Image (cartoon, rainbow, N blue to C red; front, side, top):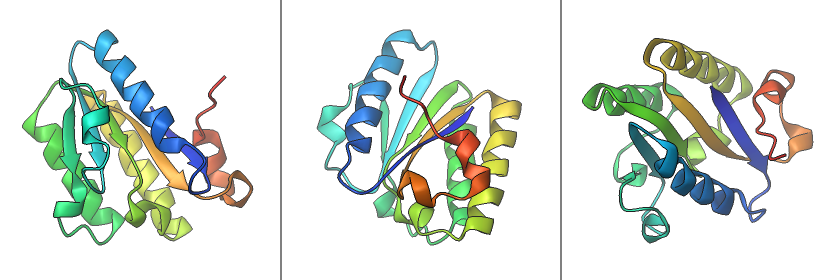
Length: 139
């Protein structure tokens, strides 16, 4: 599963993701990973989550970030869910790169059973057509 929480900056995407990550820990038999661009929300997360500050690494494009995710998954074969919050490399990506990235994540999901929930700072009305099927519906 690959899902995106989409909305303009300041619309509460991070709060939703933190709440979902903390709930996922209760139901999980494997590891939950939360990736953020800084440490600002590290203490809002359950201690049993694996928190990764991606801002400490030079991730400049989605191909590099995909490799980064593969490294996380290869390090722990029981990763169930990865939450990715607020990375500019995703929000600033060109549509074609974002589409390829989603396809790569779908392959990781099929091969390793890892689910991805990603925040994307774009208005729902400005997302490309291919992304609409991946938008998380809170209902």
